[in-house]
Image: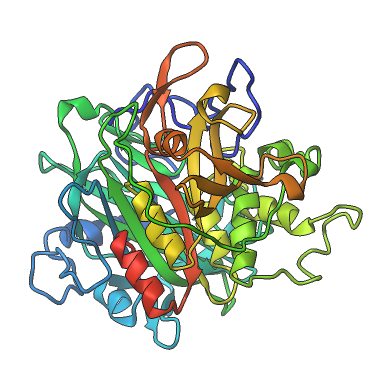
Length: 491
C-alpha cells in the first residue's frame, strides 16, 4: 500500500473546509544503508551488526532448528484466511531466552523480562535534541527471525518497559524483502518513560530507496511493485549511566506487519453487540494553551487523552508526586502528564503510536500494543470482553455525522455499541468532559477508520489509517479477555 500522506497523529484540530497538512516530512531521497546515528554507537555497532549478520540464517539461541524462523508458541498469529495483519510478541521467559543476548539477561517471575547483565562496554551518545553527550553502558538483545504470515507493506514495533532514572533503550527493526534482500537496521525509537536523561524520539531520514521509516512505521515506498516485507527481527539496546547498577526492564516486544489493500470504502459489517463500557471521559480541549512545548497544548492531545481514559479504566493512577510539576490550577493534570510522557521530540507531537502504548505499560499491571483490526466485528469481540479500543481515523467534517469537525488524524476511544449497532466513542475533541461521549453512525465510522485512501478538502487523494488501534489490557488478563485478544491476533 503506497501512502501519499501519513495521518497527522494527534492533530485533532477542527478543519472546517480545509485540513492541516501532515507534520511528517516526505522522504524523497535514499540515504546510506547504515543511517548516521541510527545504529549502536562506536564499537557496539560493529560487534552487534556483525553478530546479527552471522546469525541471519540461523540466529544463536533459536531452539526449533527451523533456520532462524521461530516455532509458533502461542505468541504469534497464524493469519486466518483474508486477514491482512500479523502480530508477534515476545513476552515469556522462554521468549527472552530464545533471542541472541549480548550483555543482557532474562529474568523470570510474574512478569518475565529482559535486563542488563554484564554490559558489552561503554559508548558515548549525543542527544540530538539537547546536544548533550554522555557515556552509557549498553547491552543488546536480538530476536529470532519472525516470518510474517502476511507479507507486509508496513511494519510497526511496540514495546513495554520500565526505565528508571539514568536508563533508556533503543528499538531497531531489520526486515527481509520478498526478493531475498534485506533492509538496514532501522531505528524505530529511542525511548525512556521520563525526559531527564534523553529526549524520547523517533529518528527521521532513514531509507534505503525501497522502504523508509515514517516516525513509527516502516513502509514500502511503492507497494504497487509487489515488493513486500516477508520476515523481520527486532533488536533492543539497553543503556544505563556508566558506573551505575540500574537497568531498564523490557517486558514485552512486538511487531505488527500488515498489507491492508488500498480502498476508499470497506464492506459493511453486521451489528452483533449492544454494550457500553464505563470508561472515564476526558476532554483535550480544556487543555488548549497548556504546556505549548508539547505540540501547542491540549488542542493536539487526542492520543494521550485517549490513552489516559483507558489507563484509568483499568485502574491506573498517577501519584501526587508524579503530578507535582503540573500547575495546580489545571483540572485533570493527569492529561498534561500523559502528553509530556508520550511526546516525541523529533515528530513534534504526542501521537507516536508505540510511545503511547509504552506509556500505558508504565502503570503497574498494564500492557499495551499497537495493531490493526479488520472490522467492527473485531471491535465488538474486544468490547464484549470488556476491552475498550483506541482507534485512529481521519475524515472531513461531513463524513462523520455528529463529530462537528474534520481532521487529518485523530484518536478516540470506542467504548461500546448501541442496540442499532452504532459506535459509542469517548471522543476527546469536546468542549467539556461531559460532552466527550458521542454516538457515531456505524457505517460512517467503519469507513473513516478502516479505509486506506480518502480525498481531503482539496480533492487530493491522501491516506487513511487502515484500522490502526492501541490495545491496553491487564498483564494477567482473564481467560475471556485472552480469548478475545487472540481472536484479533494479539497474544
